[in-house]
Image (cartoon, rainbow, N blue to C red):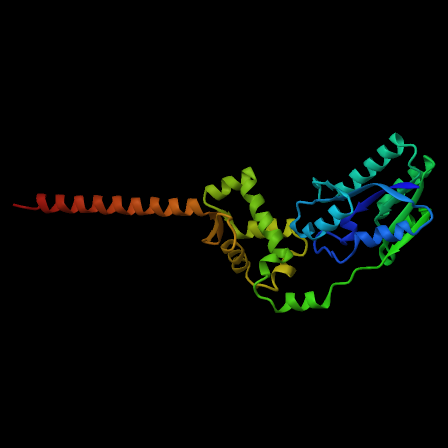
Length: 286
């Protein structure tokens, strides 16, 4: 029997903040094909923000297996846009392709329990596929069949490399996320104006980072106890044209202009002073 297969990549990676990519999409397919309910995989879609550079490790396997990578831009931090799009696509397919009787959802997210129930109303069979210890119990109970996936473990070699290497800091999650926030600050019209008009105070920058990055201070402090030192390290290694001056974040170009303006004012003051001095000398003659 031909089936459509839908991957919730964020659930497989166990979140976006520190994705674990030690799983095999090929093995998931193999496990599914060993069941009596699956004869052929007709449609495969994987939902994620594929612009995240950390997901590049999945690229070769995605292409090899013929999986369609669905790009999702998460417009809200409170709701998962990938889950919403996956559910919409599943229901659209259930109505437009009546010959498809079995649907496979690779996710342990309890939000899909309602989707599974709705598919049952359309007379469809639902197979759930997720990590054994991380599947929502309600989702598991409403699925007609559940296929467990071994929970991925980080490789010991990788942990050791991350601990001893001092040159890979900028590849760490906290560095990547901070770079993204700094880029966004430059693109935000209100904050861009602040950067041009004297800079953004560091307490404000700190608050923005805390709001945007979960556990920011905890992750950052293992590299530097001072926020300014941490940001300087990031800015030195990127093309982000920002600079820390007088405990503010400002545009480098504005800093240069500021120095030029200051120099011009000083030069003008010296000229006026010299002129005044000459006049005093002249008028002081008998």
